Amino acid sequence: MTGFNEENHTNGNSLLRWPGESARSAVFLRPDLAGLQASPLTIGLLAVLLVGLGVLLQRVGITGPALFYWQAIASGWLTTVLLLWACWLVVRSRAGAPGVATLFAVLLLQQIVISAPLWGLYLLLPQVPGLTPQSLAWAQWVAPFVVVGWVALAGAVLLMRQAATGSVRAAVLMLFLLAAAVDLFVPPMQFWYPDTSAARMAALEEKRLHFTQEVMERQSGVLVDTLNALRPQRAGVVDLYAITFAPYADENVFRRESNLVSDVMRTRFDAQGHTLQLINHAETAGELPWATGLNLQRAIFRAASLMDHNEDILFIHLTSHGAQDGKLAASFDPLDVEPVTPAQLRAWLDDAGVRFRVISVSACYSGSWIAPLAEPGTLVMTAADAEHTSYGCGRKSELTFFGRAMYGEQLRSTRSFEAAHAQARKVIDQREKEAGKTDGYSNPQIAMGEAVRSRLAALAARLDASGP
Image (cartoon, rainbow, N blue to C red; front, top):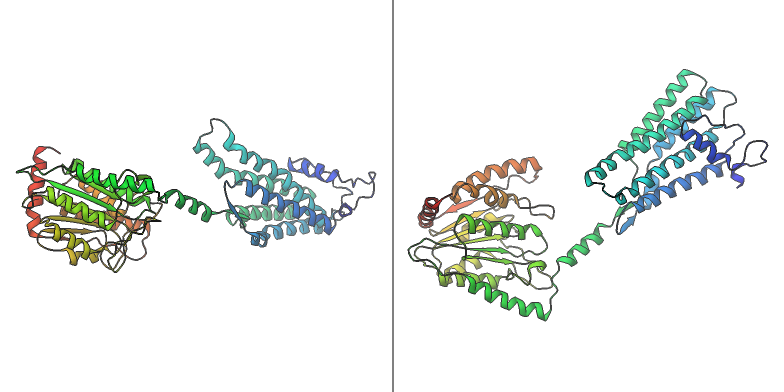
């Protein structure tokens, strides 16, 4: 190790003195730097050791696949410049002071001595029995301040003891405070980042339908059983039949919204035994009929065969991604599922002879469904107009903004779809502004036919008379 310029033990320049004196300074004891001399090789070896330690600790701190970003080596050098400046000020202020390289080498070793055990303890915290997630989150927030603060204070004390004048000591303190602020608030780039592509692929694989003969045969039985489970209409009673359609398997938000809407129809609109869910999702592939255009057509025809067309209402809620051409996105890999269009839905309803209809479309650009579906016996409600996206249909969303406001909130206190939609518009507008939606207000739309209005009023009157 010639980089440490070791001559003999009598001159105090033993290899073992470097970590020893650095450790003393790390706990604020006065080190004996007499005879210690650092060469460029010394600085290089310590820098490699410090960077290597950071690379190792960062990788250990990431669970699962990670990507190495070697370009991070080019960031974070402002702190180094500030520390070298502080060392230079000290050496310049006092004759006989250790050299800049020696002081800087001690600072590097000091940082290793302090940060290695502290970060090691931090990485072991998740293994501590009884430690709550809140405590772990608090430790995660505090840890950088503890490590950086200790390193900065120990380094400042080391150099201030070597400085000859009060002004130099003040300058050294300011430089270390600035270096600490840079480390905390303008941190260098990380060498390792979670491999989100691998996690995303794993999540998609979990959601992916495993298309086997058993699954196919079971689905046929599920569809038949579900259609047969629908109950006939009650004579003299305005009944509501409800179908929810969630064809996009890659987003859980649509499945959750389908469940919510079905529950609201059952509990608020007396649709027990008259509700049917069509969902594309790997977790429900063996329990619920798949959301395909053909199954939606079958569900419409089955409900129509049980309804009194002169008094009953068919409610259909469709939730997915939408396109400006009006197509409702469908995905259930490896099954090939075609998107549903408003023209198709109108044709199926007409062919089935359904007279009174409530169509709810929760999708971007869903206002394009209004014109093709509007007629005297139909109420059409959409989450957006034809020019704007709706909001809340991503992986991080619990519900879409429309589904939450319309079905999770407003229809809990009223049975008027018009009143609920009017209130939901206001709520959605406010929430989109708070969320920072960039393409403008989604502008949910509604078109009420006069014939269906009287049927809905009769339904609401019957239900309101029986209780909240």
